[in-house]
Length: 312
Length: 296
Image 1: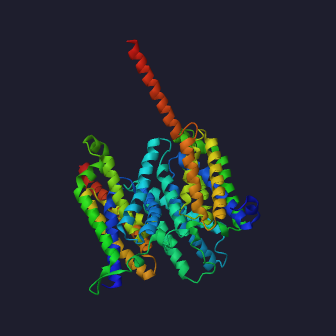
Image 2 (image 1 turned 45 degrees about the horizontal axis):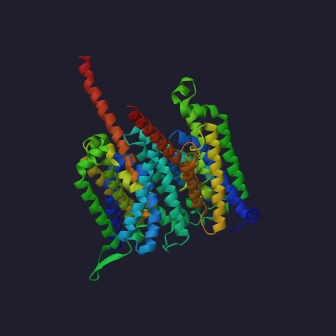
Image 3 (image 1 turned 90 degrees about the horizontal axis):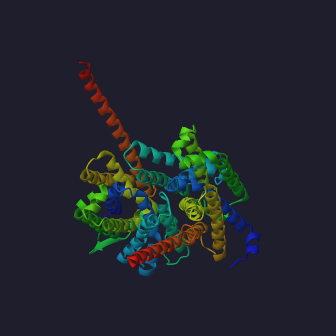
């Protein structure tokens, strides 16, 4: 096992730790809104569809601009564009045809991901500089995060979080009472677009560190865990963000300590463990407290019925 | 049998085996659940390989299919607890199982040499590599016969349980009132889907196998109003997409499953647009017929 002082003394380990924690924090906090609006699975579509965008950004940067293909800002821009297109495509299938939203999401996801895999093959067959390890976008590779990447992730993530704070009232109203929100004069389309944009940003800043395939776990798991401990929206967003950040940090630390274990999957397992613990032992809503409550109610009813029969 | 013929036949048979149960997956609105199943079979495949050392072993197929079923049962259990909202239960279990599978592979736990790209999208050419020889003559890839067996099982299941599948798909409550064991039928059906996913895994991987299951059925659903018609059209679109995707991949030197996924998507979009156009023309013609009548 590696001790924390040695861990944080190492530049690469520091980058792995902070790179994944930022992803976990932003995705966890903003995932709360996707969770409450019951649209968690769209994050799977956006995550998978970020692949062709990230690869197109690489191709354009290398072949047209003659620049560094792994530039974080370009990657984020490309991933946001294709991720958004995929979500809009899924939505428009569900609205315009008789295909249900789950099938529409599956169609959109596979088409964009399939296109991404064709691009990946074109890049790895072609003479592009810096193409080595380009398939890291699939499962992420936190150890190649540079200081500039980290700064970009923090800046873009902060923009998303600030947007959330600025539009807090609108987001809350739209989430819990969409009809009332429209009656009060908030434009549903505008609020939805801003909320959706923050969620897309939260998903795509994780592409480099944890990859496109497992990104859904960062968006779905922390809110589901946090929801068992709190009943207020600020509490949910804060706790979910904290779970995301801490779970990612612990997972990153474990992956370094155990050696040769990929970071992204290990974080996913850590987050899942947090979720299971929350589901089992949280004091107010959990499987164990629910079972205890049921047993107590059953006992009380039994006693009542016995007392009644004794009275007669 | 030549390599190209064997591989394209394999593409067609795999597409058919996946697409037929897919018709019911689409109608039951289980597409994203099946996407989870496809991810979750990975740890089952890796552990199964460690025990059997044969990717086509029936034990591996059944074991990995049970791992996939964990997503279905876990989803039902999480919904029953009432503690998780919306569609989140479907997204909670499978990433953990898939992550475990990826970790198993990188730890070289079972010496199964699965490249990440193969895990995600499969490799049809590799799957078709080992040909079955009868007295020195190749009669096609060995894997083709495994897929043919799965196709036969799927067709037999749909044929035998057709009335029950139909009523549980369109009116589950009515089926329960009739005394059908809808939960059991659903679990058996999802297990069969999981078995199909595991066997198709080498050809299409964890992500693109969903395309083979969902997209032909969705395309057929766009233009059919009867279940029997939809099943026939699903088979037609599956074959069309497999052949088209295979030749695009051949021309582009790209992965077959990725080309098939994109081609299936294009066919879906084309059919959706043609259907809209046809509806508009029909409406226009009807209004033209009606107008003089109204004028009189």
